[in-house]
Image 1 (tube, rainbow, N blue to C red):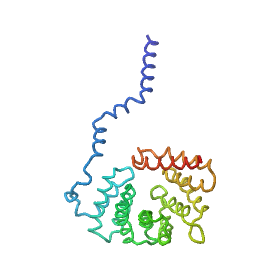
Image 2 (image 1 turned 90 degrees about the vertical axis):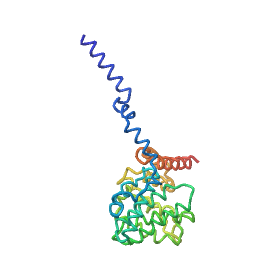
Image 3 (image 1 turned 60 degrees about the horizontal axis):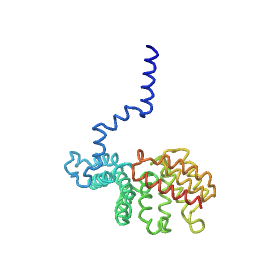
Image 4 (image 1 turned 90 degrees about the horizontal axis):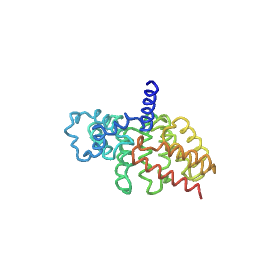
Length: 282
């Protein structure tokens, strides 16, 4: 009898293991899970923000915008956050938190737009203006970071590192190093990419050694963000270290999952990683 019971329990354990945890399977079918799918179809673009009870509270609107605007958020949600942040900034133009939030949200909207340079530029210009209103000074490293990102998108169609824009972007990114933890090492990797892609001396600030140093810091301190490894791999390719470049691309690919970064960035980054892998095969 005991042997029979033990066999039964053993069979149940095997079934449970092979099913990948029955509890998790049940969660997939819950009304909450279905609601999460339905929520992605919300009317973010047509929603009336004037009906919000905090519509006349600029700081509250900015706080909501900041929380709503993440990389993994649906595009409509980012646009909704931008509307909130713009309204907050309209009501209080002297608040640094509000202006910095507006610059941040404007960048994430602009960076999520494909095949429409005019719309990218329009959103990024909002971000540049907001960051400038805060002041591109040592006291405002976060505003400097988002200024550099937005300005980079604006000049991208002319060449990402157009010489006439380069000094101001470079200076802003150097200040942004005081807040290097932003976006999981964002200031480190963006300044590193500037050194990697900019023309070398005497016509520019390009410096492969400086780029490698910054990327090494980024992957060591912030081993969460796929772009830290992607950018490091690009520098390693330039340094003719193909084996290490492939190792970093593999890490980047495994990190770039939609569950963390959303479908848009997951697809975008993995496509870029695949392109770099093909480059190494040549």
